[in-house]
Length: 423
Image 1: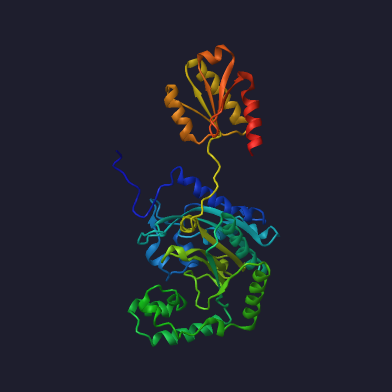
Image 2 (image 1 turned 45 degrees about the vertical axis):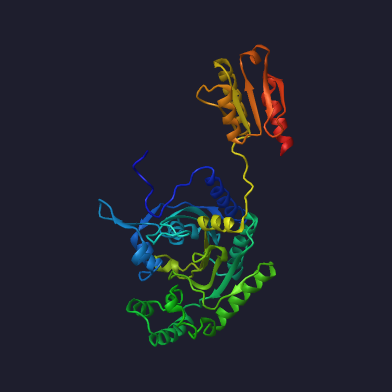
């Protein structure tokens, strides 16, 4: 037995459960690929300053949760705690915004890392699929991304999720609200750390999950009452477009996101079957992030959906994904000659796209048939010395139990024909 275990707060994805995670990633990515989003992959670590500037130096992510380290060369790096800053950095570095085709639409999938107190649905290593539309200020883009996420969840069979929607205003109207909120917070009975946070970024106090804080926020001023005319009109257009698409949402005047870069549209996908870790994804508009990390003005919008939490949401609803069998044909050789022949036939089947496997390890017929049953294959091809002497193999339908002899040279064509009919 190994003396090593996965680090605390992490997990291993292993078959058969890993197939579910792959299916979730594919379902989230599918509508993005159909909507002009190209795939981007960034390093697992970045310069610490990228996240300090973009995510916010006062955020819990940067101050408490980021895995930061110094290299032998003296560089300060951090495992990526989120995807947006990395994707925008990559787009800027590659000058994608100068190609003349804005917005730059990108999607990504990968692992992210935060030092948090582990519990079900909250891990120190987690998986997300995200999307970013960079370089255009258009309510239709905000609506598009919300609709695509809704489409992805529904394609998986999820129904009991809710979309929360709010506007965080912009650089014109948010400072006025910020001052009003700070004044309100100063009158509450809050601990020193929370009061300090209120002076740096008071909106984050609204996102504090502690009951002792939340029960004091009932009369807090609402940002929607401070929105300028431009932000009001923008938000109404987003709402109208989502509604016209038949996507239900809930207005949440207290919804804020835990990152400094959000402006105007902000949204969250929640599932009430997950307990305290109810958010399965979220995002919003981040019009000032590019300038924060040294780039030009590039108004942008995006989201990230948690693969781990989506899987938990599926389990909470009792949704069983229809996953294709990993193996369609399983070969059972008895004897060296049969092994050589069936190995060649399995190779041929794989080359034409049929999922095929073989019983390895020179097992007897009984043991090899157990392998065939465990594989989930629809058909088993069985051959021994007597079969080969007659120029045939036995083809068994693993569902019906029917078995018949077919010619050695007919194996590939017959299986391709039968599997095509099944599909």
